[in-house]
Amino acid sequence: GGLGGGGSGGVGGGVGGGGRGGVGRGRGGGGSTWLRFGGGAQARASASAPAPSALSPDAVADVSTVATAAATGEHSAEMLFALSGHDDSVCQVHWSPDDLQILSCSLDGELRLWDAKTGANLRSFHRHEEAVNAFAWLPDGRHFLSGGLDKLLLLWRTDGTVLQAWHGLRVHDLAVTHDGANVVAVCAERKIRVFRLGSFEGSPRLSSAGETSLPIAHPVTSIQLSRDCAHLLVNCAGDSQTIELWGMRDRAPLLKYEGQKQSRFVIRSAFGGHAERYVISGSEDSQVYIWNRHDAMLLQVLPGHSGAVNAVAWSPLHDDVFVSASDDHTIRIWGPVR
Image (cartoon, rainbow, N blue to C red):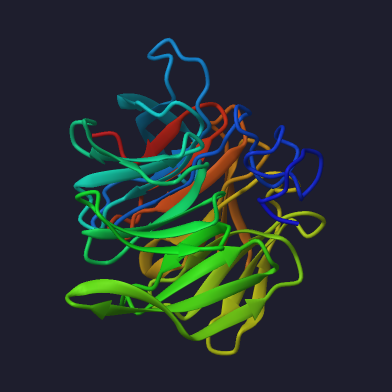
């Protein structure tokens, strides 16, 4: 099981396969969008697959501001601007650590850097030969990692320079610890690999020395590290349909969060709220789910999207702000209406 399969109809269906049947997305199919906030984010965001749009024939990401009343579930939205330029489904979106820029990757094999305030496309990154599944910022905001179906794991500088290229790893998801010391990668095999991130001549450098791994019983679609790097959220697909909370020290699952639907597609979750007391997740039923992190109690189910919600991210600085991404072709930033 995994994203690398070539067909549709089951967990093995992959990005680059024939359709949406698997954990991944077929090139030219519905696609998915994943995103995370940087260190100074001021809104919540969600991601969705691009589709034909009146705004642009290209892949489009809609950015909205949404007020959500936690007690009533009422919400309203106002679109700020749209980001267009990708020629295929957008796979992931992250704010830079300083929140001044947005980075995206796509099934078109490109990564694009955007100005977060104006929406201007600042730079495009071309090196992958197939779909780019995932990427992760390094804490300095000047470097990032990307992984794709071409089995390339690349370490970039934001000026477009490739500092390091690893061959042979089909990466499904990436995360960098907040101290910049380790890279956590979900690869095609059923395990989560942890690499060291050091430096060489003043630049970051990946190393396989001292590599460790976490064996997982179910196909893994995504991961999310807590800010203190003590816990890891693991989204499991297939029959499991759960989000597991793993302790990084004991290398074992501690809690399970249930209720969301994620039988076939890539669904991403995140920590959020004050002191990361909540777990938030997208779902195939077009809703956003929020649990108490510490006892796994489901607190709220939020409607709003009209397609599967593929990813969510909660602002690390603002407790009432998060983002969600959906197959209704929108990236929605949720927060108080000013």
